[in-house]
Image (cartoon, rainbow over all chains, first blue to last red):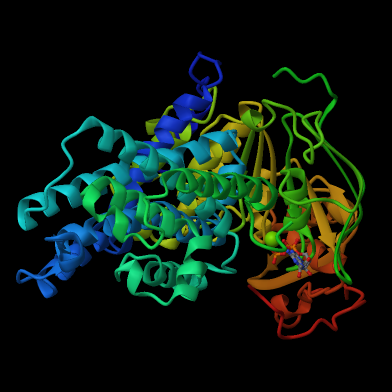
Length: 292
Length: 315
Ligand SMILES: Nc1ncnc2c1ncn2[C@@H]1O[C@H](COP(=O)(O)OP(=O)(O)OP(=O)(O)O)[C@@H](O)[C@H]1O
Ligand SMILES: [Mg+2]
């Protein structure tokens, strides 16, 4: 028998390392966050279609509609240019892509390919898996927002808020939106029946929501019944919350309701967050349908 | 080793159906600590279903199951620390390298093996930096095995672990498994390679239609030790053979006749494959006459059942 075999024989009978302490859930969660983030940036699809997509769109909108035109120019005495108007929408869309879309597709694929099943067969605590996803979403999401804001400020001269109050508001809208997107992504990952259908099943609603939630269009331009439909879903509120951060206060009266509606935003995002958590707890599966 | 139960695995009357397909039917199984048990059986016999119930992946319809003293349907904390699993099919994790995966999975276990030793043990040293996506089928399977043994489990499940291994890799895998068994690991493996079962297993169980048909050591299963034996020798260059249930007497006779060494002597028991095929109902043990040429001394072997289909479904 070959040399490698002999050495394999000697080595594998060696006693395992002495520390028999159980690794903590937190330590595993950190390891998973690093691993998940590494995987995210190694997959070209996720980098292009969730990480860079809002940045590219912002550049596109700003360039196509640029040339001195403004939004709400007459009504507010000056208005804002397109880059500035669309930035909050892109931030909101980015949050949804990085949390909801990435997780819904990614976990559907992990389930179909058997990654989840493999993990379930190890002592990895389920909580560490979910925390790893949350960590990955936060890391990639913050990097994306930083890039988006930097591009907006440097390439398109978008003024960013300078007061602490606006950034505090940004923080809670961002965190609440990301949390809701994350748990809803976890829950929605059970909808696609296979890895092959996952992209289509996830991208369709994501795209529709972007169209009706004031991400691609000025929300006021939509027919009111569509505005009502959009108001059921979190993206509309997330985009509106981001507008309250990045648009000057003189644009507040231009909102359909005439206000930034911060309290209803917090409430509706929280309701989605709780609903998503309940849904996850009831429906999350580690195997494919009919596997057990 | 904190368990005090007498057996690593104890199964009584296990039953599992999918719709009208009964995958596992009144199955009993006992595996002692430190034992290596191989489960053989045709495709769809219920091997994977049984093993995955023991692993806690699938629910059972009825029956008692104890694995390391716990019910895998309701595992105790720490139960998974002691179990290693190589699934029949497992994909995913394509974008990570061998090194990254082995080092990452280590974090899950309280007493993992050394990652370099595990990678060496499965022969993937030269592929450490290769992403799983770029591994060949057999290399990927070796990675599965590496992740399965990483936690230094007390009980290791291997569902067709060597599918896609080249012959040398299979030999190396066998010696790895033997060394794990020598170290006290209890091992339950399924395989379609009878030589593998014969090489590795203390006992083999043959499953058909969700039921264990026979379970014994590879040398004795299905009465193999008492079965007729084929003795072959050369007489003036001519091949001769005889089928007998008393080979020692025949060989003594022959030795006397030749006055010492019997030229070209061989004594063959039915192979595990012969026994396996007979037990599952396809006796295709080759007729000894075909091997002997003409003019030999031949005891005709009763040709009980040679009606097996000529085209066996194979994987
Ligand atoms: N998830 C499932 N849903 C429905 N039927 C199933 C499922 N899993 C297994 N079966 C059925 O149960 C029977 C046993 O399947 P199992 O996978 O246990 O066989 P096996 O002995 O492992 O076969 P192989 O050697 O091909 O791996 C088969 O008839 C199979 O079709
Ligand atoms: Mg199987």
